[in-house]
Every structure is written in C-alpha cells, then in structure tokens.
Length: 355
Image (cartoon, rainbow, N blue to C red; front, side, top):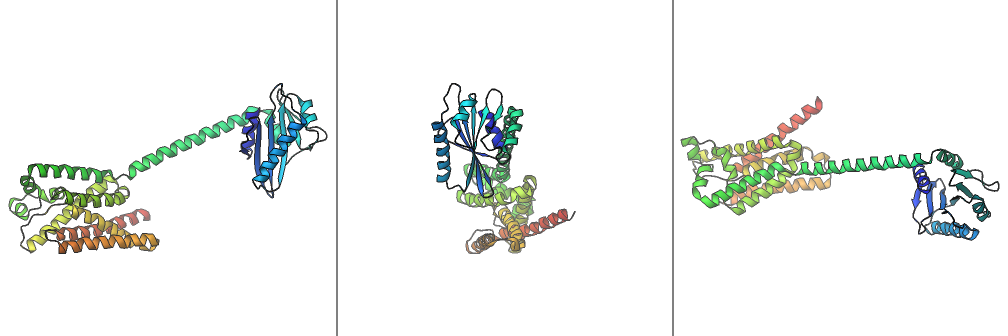
C-alpha cells in the first residue's frame, strides 16, 4: 500500500521529502499561510509500533521541517499496519493520527481523533476504493513525460543538424579539392579555370565565370575565404533553405565575376582573377541589408554586431584598394548584388506575409 499511497499523494499535489528511514515518508503541500504535512509510516508485519517510536518519528519530522524554515505546519500522521489496536494505543496522545489497515484497505479514525483534515478523509476513502488506480495513472504520466522528453530530444537533435551549414561545408570541401588539384598540377589548372578576360571574350569560355570561384591562389587565400563562407553560411543557409542558398551563392559569385570582367574591359586589363570572395561578399551584402532594414528591432548587442559587420565589409573593400592583386571590382559587384538580393528576399517575405 505504501507505493500506491505515495502515487496517490503525488497526484493530489503533495511533494515527497526524502528521509533516512525506509518505511517513513513525508509529503508536503503548500497552502495559503501554512504547509500541510503528511507523515506516513509503513509498519512491517510482526513489527512492534510503540508510543515511544511514534513520538520520536513525529517530533523528528516536525523538527526537520522547522529547520528548513517552513512556515506554520499542519500535519497528519498515517500509520499503515495490520495491528490497528496497537497503532491506536501507540498514538493515543495525538489527535492527528489515523490508521490504515493494510489487509482490508480500511481507514480507521478513532473517536478521540480529528474527524477530517482539510478534506483528506474523503480523498483517502476515494483512494482506498481503488488503490492501484493512482499508481497506474502516475505511471502513465511518467511514460507520457518520457515520451515528450524523448520527442523533444529528437527534435533538438534534428534542429541541431538543420543548423549545420551543410551546403557551405560541401562548397568548402569542393574548394579544398580544387586547391589540392591546383597545387599538384600547377599552372595548367589555374589557366583552365580562372577568370581570364581574354579566354572568355576571345575563346568564349564562359564557364570560367562559374569555375573561378572554386580556385584559390594558395592555402592562406583559401582559409581566409572559407572562414568567412562558414560564418555567413551559418547565418543565411537555414532561413534561405539549402537549395535556395546554394543557387543564390553561385549566382552572386557569377554576378561578382561579371562585375570584375566589366571593370577589366573598362581598364583594358587582361589579369585573371580567382577566389570565392566575390560570392562571399554577396552573402555579406544580404546580411548587411537585412540587418540595417531591421535595425529598429535590434537591441544594443544586435546594433553593435551590425556595426562590426559593416566595419568588416569596409575593411575588406579598403584592403582591396590598398593591396595589389586583389580583385576589388568582384568584391564591390558581389556586395551590390547581395544588397539587391536582400531587397528581393525582403519583398518576397512581405508578399508571403501579406497573403
């Protein structure tokens, strides 16, 4: 009966408090202005329940609750036993002591005891009609909680997987493979894949507008670009969707390449270009546009991040003017294309919300 009664009391809103005695349980329920405490003693068969033991358990429990700084305590002592007469005799000095007969599931309230205790008599009589019901209900609750916890765990794991920028990682891997091929085979690979104006306009090798963004001049060039790609992809890949993000990345890279070609034609330059920085600047352009457009919704930390992002963009473009060999035209064209893409994305979101 002890386990069944424990389940019933938990369902009734009582909180179990651990003790160092296996067969002695304490249950608490906070009420307005006081705490209701139930002291439950399971008296094993052939065990002697004496008045001295009763008083020791009751007083120890009350002292424990006082040490824990509980407010006013109203308690009821329940003894689960087969020796009802002995339990009545042992607790004759306390009006707040009831007995539960283990074999017949009978509530015994001697005539000198309180007739009720905050409605507990009716609750116990309901429990004794079907003692196993509360335990079964509590087990169902536990199973449901376990199922909910397991479902939440799976959802969190799926969410964590979704947050990984897989498209960016694949692009990084492809860039690394191409870098290895370039290092191993040397100049012929660069000459076949770079953004060479003469090869594009004279030999009509337009595929170079795509392939140049997978070619890097060295390991440091590759690492600097891929770090930026990862962080930008981590921000954009999930909200855009992987397919849309992959398509947009390559479109931005090709637009950056066209901007670079236009500048080379205007400057009458035949210097080839390589690298993913144009496409990456396009991604940064999207983030800059969306961030600025939503700056009024940002808290102070968000505004600081926006300022840092704009500063990074400015430094990248400034470095392009100061460092020879950097295709700044691709950076600026990619940034402009990204800002325009951010505008289109915002209009699409507004149109969807309006519908």
